[in-house]
Length: 402
Image 1: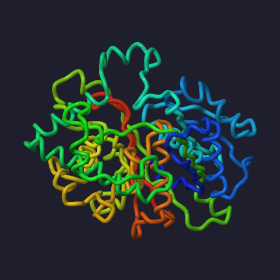
Image 2 (image 1 turned 90 degrees about the vertical axis):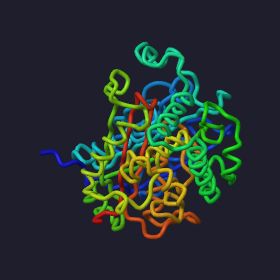
Image 3 (image 1 turned 180 degrees about the vertical axis):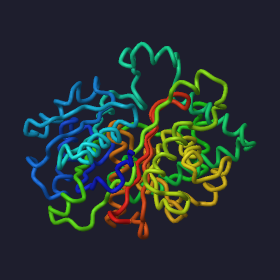
């Protein structure tokens, strides 16, 4: 019977560029920047990598189609390279391919790299998909905007749990202000300026009740991971390394859109995906066992609702936990210690790997001013799409043997 990949994959090297408006470089330079940090961190040669996965979402305006941009840029020695795209879970799905390849015994060392170069188009948020979204997708979401869809989530959540709009908006503002405060200590973050809760609440409305500071922008950036098996890592002379405890994906089947069981106040996929991830990792009480998190905060309401779908806050209890500081850097489970999508940035194909990069740094006690005290398990979460039609990924990592 299948048992998952707990402790079957070791992360031996990671790298991440500075995120932001990287006008001075192209996607190729971003890939090289992330790769060079990862390969130096791993202490191996480029020729030792046996297969690679490239994650990029908006390829038409970024690196282009196929996996050739990665193999050509890194001069990979004629090895298998696969391009992955899965909305905002793209980077994590590239990582999943690399992990399963070594866990299966097919390869000894593999690489996953995510990259996106979005700021050159001059658009503040995600570019319009146009025909690139395919004919079926537009039938499900005609004339839809991301802020509008997630604003509906906020309204439904408030009604479902009887939370006054002002109280919900203040909790959402706290989510954003917390991420800004954390990013001040992150030299690679896109936005490094602290803001107050009142400033967030006073920002212009984008889609009621979401204001400008409730929304994350997009960035240029790349992140990279090199993985192997624990046995091979020991053969390389490594002792203290991070291993994957679980790696799960869950995608909508159409039930949220097509039936009346879903009331629009939460993410069905995240609830399911996190349950599968905890089972694979052997975690029975996530509120007590998870040490830190990087979750998908495309909008502040997304992070708030996700705290419940991850089974950490009780249903209807995320507002209280947020206002009590439970998810602050000095709280029970720090969330977005590096600033999250909101402030570190969101180059779509790189975001999942960027989240893992922060967990990796924290577990190796290399996170600088934002270093947490002896973290055990780190969780990352991506959500691509809309509340009613999305892709969710959850990854849990920790020290080997823990």
